[in-house]
Length: 415
Image (tube, rainbow, N blue to C red; front, side, top):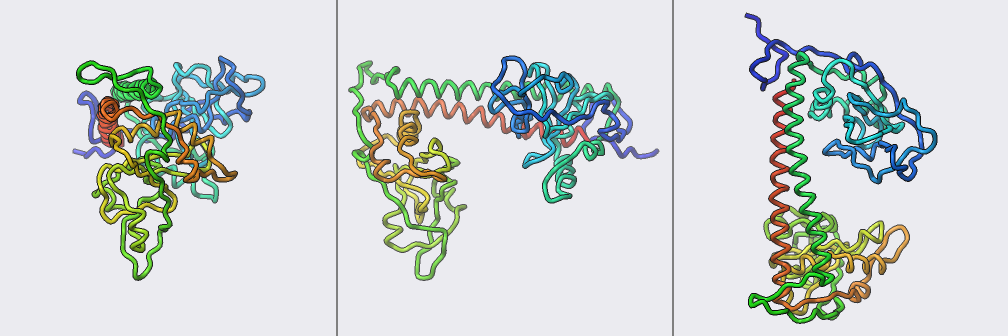
């Protein structure tokens, strides 16, 4: 008996037989480039799909921001059911988007290529562009010249594997249900994040107040400047290694910018540099310290922060960061939140100086005004917000597990 070769590892039991290989150009009846138009303010009806509006991970239409194309609207550029769009240039070359009627009147831009699927299930075909072997094909095809890019003729040559239409539809229906479940979990996470943002605004504007365990009001919040409740320290430690200096772990700008967890285990993966005893003494990191990013390319991106939750051994911070060390008792969980509120971030933006790169000085950081509740109320606030963060983290773990499961399905249900 002849052994079947072109079949997936995981298959619905009612189907059998080998899959057939076809090229994208063979299953598409309309292939065209998008319109070359400037983006203008959204006109309320016609949405403009650009490369940047296709989300890198979800492949959903997520406009940044929502705009319309300028000039006369040509119907031939409007996407319809069954249309798959490919990005043809830039860092995200080969990224795909399957048009969904719920996205409304959507016209696609010039750096995109549209394939109207005439033979086969569009969702089944689109899903194959989420696999790793598709990414390898894009890398190979797009890097044949100096500038990464794909054209319509190259995309036509994309070879895919196809079962019968009923099997395509069965697979597409199943994976669509998986996607709907995944989107529901992501929406739940988004709603929790929106709720947290809204409740933080109310807490720190004191529209919401907590009470003590006996139901009594807490004292009024005190207005303070950061320089009155602690001190800022800069660093002179770079990424170099020098003789006659001690080795230390270096906490750098991106560790704080990405809000990474900093503890005695995680820092062991950080860069090892050397520093003088005097530098180690002045730039060490203790429980309760807060690290800030004092510079950025834009003034509204300054002030990312990370709280140190334990004394860090043999660790220092780089000259790209600034350390705030409180001189009064502050609930450590509370300090994780109070510097990340609009009123504080707005002050940082206002005080930033520069042209090509913006910075904040120690003096300016020290002048930042905050409103500080009593220590017991800080604890109430911190516990409440921390519980919300735990819920958000739990939902994020659900998202990651389901995405991993879906990735495994794609590897096994397709060839």
